[in-house]
Image 1 (cartoon, rainbow, N blue to C red):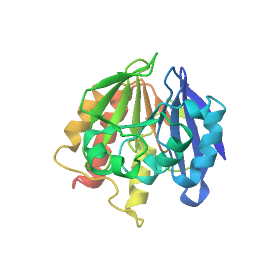
Image 2: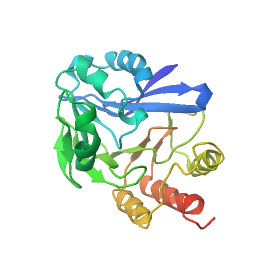
Image 3: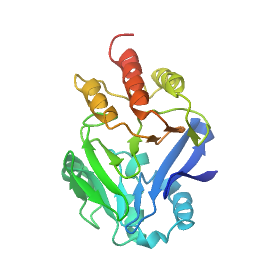
Image 4: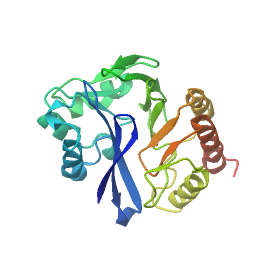
Length: 243
């Protein structure tokens, strides 16, 4: 089942819960002069996501497709989106553009972003954050809506289960449980931990987001700085060698 919830003015969470994985997959549509979709979902989810987007905008008018890193749930249906939205352009790190995205999706060259670079979709302004290996992969980055205070955090604050769309309660306990469950699965060590991880998360937390929009689990609203700092502590406990 796919659900739609407005998490901030003109920003919508589109979520599909997959029981076999005990996991929800979220995409985020920013309805604006130049609409932006953050995360595409896997190709298998494309029909569901497209139908959900169609209740909010004409899918053919999609202008920007953002994502953190090159992975199926992040950008797996990028080509399908560009086939129905001819002007849709990927927004990713410069590294992702050079090493993967322009080869994978050749319809439109990606907009490769540098750390701190900004762009506007009309009423919303976005800042790109280069975050190598946070949450995954060399080419990772995050997008921060400076207008609405929304951090599109990818796998940061990952929670398992069919949970509420939005919460102002701490999700740290659920995040820790999800990490431990993943460690006991074939997907162990899915979050890299490097000497730069803690500093990267503290730099992101310093933005003090009002909303942390994770791909998996509830969207957290409230003290985003504290939520991200607690996430950094749990990540260090589970993956940093201090457990």
